[in-house]
Structures are given as structure tokens and as C-alpha cells.
Length: 97
Image (cartoon, rainbow, N blue to C red; front, side, top):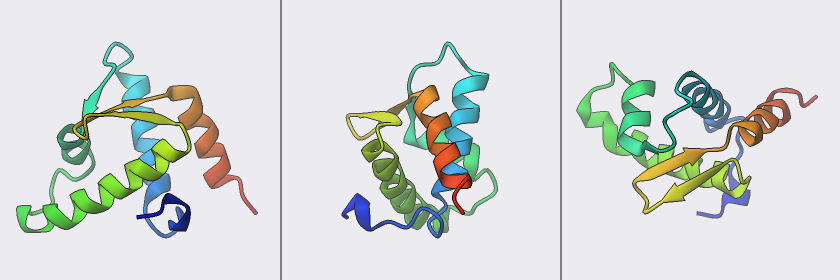
């Protein structure tokens, strides 16, 4: 999917960016997070039948965030948030008129 075609205001990206920033800030010694860890943190009470759709959207959203250079993706299984860029992206997403 073309990351430029994603509307971050309708796709839950803002919430994901804030969550990644919070994870990164609250665990400064942890450099990489798996997709599974992010999913478990964000969706603790979601049934396993919904997981496939949610993980697909999560991966698409992570690719969009990566296109903004706010994280690195390693081997399609783990990501490395870049705190200062996530912070700038939060400002960009939430301070638009």
C-alpha cells in the first residue's frame, strides 16, 4: 500500500504514534519492540478472531510512520522507535488546523 495514500486522521495512526512514544519514553533501555509486543500493549482485551485484521492495519500504520522516518523496521518483526521524530510527528498530527 502506498504510504502517501493513508489518512492518518482516519486510520488510528495518531494513537499509535502516541503509544510508541510512550513505550519508548517509559522503557528507555529497550531499543526494539516486536509487532506482537506493540499489539499486546495496545489491544489487551481484543479477541483473537479480530487479531489478523488489527495486525494488518498495525503493520500498514507502522509503514506509514517509518515513511516519516520516526521508526526503523528490522526484519518485518521488530521496530525501533525514534523518540524525537515521534514527538515531532505527534505535533504534526495533533496541531493541524
